[in-house]
Length: 181
Image (tube, rainbow, N blue to C red; front, side, top):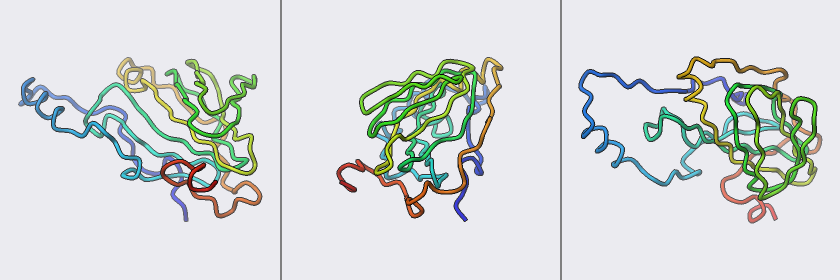
């Protein structure tokens, strides 16, 4: 059985304690970490219509204030319908589709930036039935959690059935235009 999107534990913020804390050690630790995160080193999770790859979060130890992930929607696929207090930026890497934000449709395509405002109930849709869509999501969610702004929730989970004709769809690393072309 495929692992669902959030069946595994996630790190939203990491602990910074005072015992043994040293600014010099922390700077040395930060400077020793990789500055290029390879997509091929991260795993896809979810499916069958929406796939998610966590690229950066506080658990990786490099940044405490950002979450960054890739999301790939199968051809004709859609994400969960959900909301959260933190804003989010979705940069459309490839494909074309639309979002529904609080009942209003917003069309997007490669090169566009979609802004999800705080508290907005939203869902992402791939408008193409012959190829996937991929977006890069960046949000300052850890800062909101530090401030006690905890609300987030699903209104509707992502479909557990694949889009018709795409029963064997799996995301790949790199450009789907190059590899699936």
